[in-house]
Image (cartoon, rainbow, N blue to C red; front, top):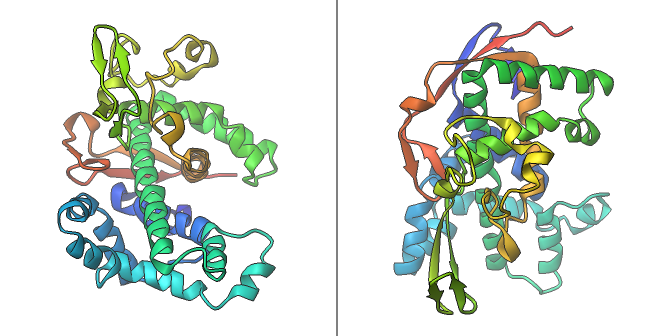
Length: 326
């Protein structure tokens, strides 16, 4: 991603929603799926467009299951891409077993050959991980870059941390160097507070729950508005302000544990949250090291489209100005 920006040979403007999601989709496929999308061209682009219609697909899963099947596993880009990924890995059992580290899909394929999973079962897992593993991450990266562009002082502080950490690691990105990007991590957490990618979730009460004067009976469907919780002034003073230091250890200590839910919480929380944080750091840090971020479109003018994923209704453009790195 950084190389593409550098190859422009000067300042470059990007619709970052499209640009970032292309690379997060590649990332989830190469890590969890064990396959590269670089050679898929048009199919990759159509899959990304298809994913953005996921609200429509989910509705049809509930009310028109025959159409859902066609959309997800039939002739749609979603189904075609899933089938190609699965087919590419089928038949390479020996190669898979020789790998030192197996991707998640490798394990699913191995399980299917022992008759534990059908191709339909695998497709459902692939669909979940590719959707949840690239679109949510892409939107958080986009919002974080936009916030950093609008807050130059915070952007400069992130860049100072990134430069210090990479120099201490001899110019190479490692898991240890990403772990040391503590201020960038606070910026990401504050970005997810203001703009949680998954802004709304539902749960079914497993037992009666007493909420002060109200009893929530078992079996009740409960809707949780995470976006509003994250802007509740009872927990977040000056809630509209972008302040990464809200997540300093001493400020986290006494905060209500359910006042911050970017990955949900409890037994049904996001199983990929650590992966997501590593990925977002790994993608943002090289950009900040190599480019100044300048705003073109501003968040105050943004109209939000609240589908399954929180996203701007219109393209959000950002200017990347190269930095001469020694």
